Length: 150
Image (tube, rainbow, N blue to C red):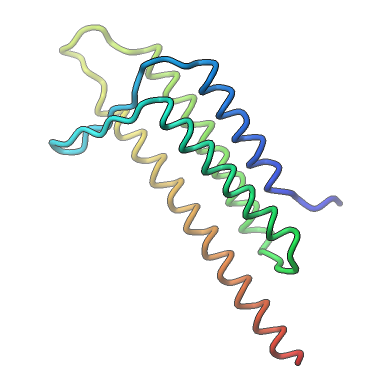
């Protein structure tokens, strides 16, 4: 059985993000309304930020694969699949909301889109915290066993 290489999955995802972002370049933006504050993020900035994030996470996994530190395989699989599925679900949701956008101003559906974006962001953030926990526990176990062997 071949070991999983999450760095490859993250790098492929980042390439897909950059391809989608640069070939579907438009002047649209993502608008999030929380209480009385509007957060406006242009699509190009979002693509660059998310693509760079996936490249960095892939680079971290690549460095860890070259070192003697072994991460928990179960937590690594959860982190990899959930992070990639969060991106896919986000892109599908944004596409869905863009094609079903209501032109009648009285039936504004932006609240459900805001809730969708916030839920995806919360899940994605929780999974990144899980990655940090996986990294810390693996480092502690690695140093504990190396110290115990000496």
